[in-house]
Image (cartoon, rainbow, N blue to C red):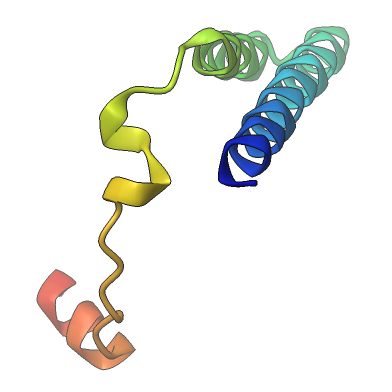
Length: 83
């Protein structure tokens, strides 16, 4: 069961990364048409990153079994450490 669930999760992740890449390329085309070449380049760079991410095989460090979940600290503690 866990192996099947993992396969489904990987497939879903791949689909989402692929869709994000396509969507960002469409945004880049629109930015070009509206004369925002810098924004278009940014969208294309992010789209390429999404494509690379979608194609990259998962590594053992990305395994759900290896992830340790810790409860988040309070928001005020996080904000005060930034400022």
